[in-house]
Image (tube, rainbow, N blue to C red):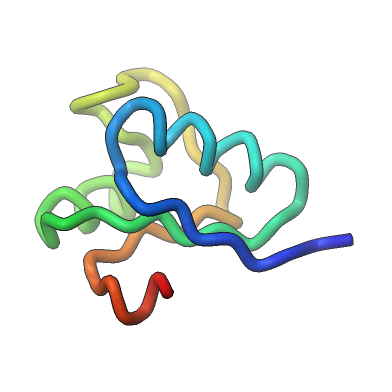
Length: 70
């Protein structure tokens, strides 16, 4: 069953957890405290500053709004 999940923190560990959940068919929001960082992840489909070369699935949505993530 698909769940909606938010991961708070877009570092290497948070991104890896979010990626794993998204590949298990969950709708995942990955929150970053930095809007530029969230935008870059969204555009590149990877967290190049923390996990370069690891592509992120479409079910993973980076955001900078804590309200939206929660």
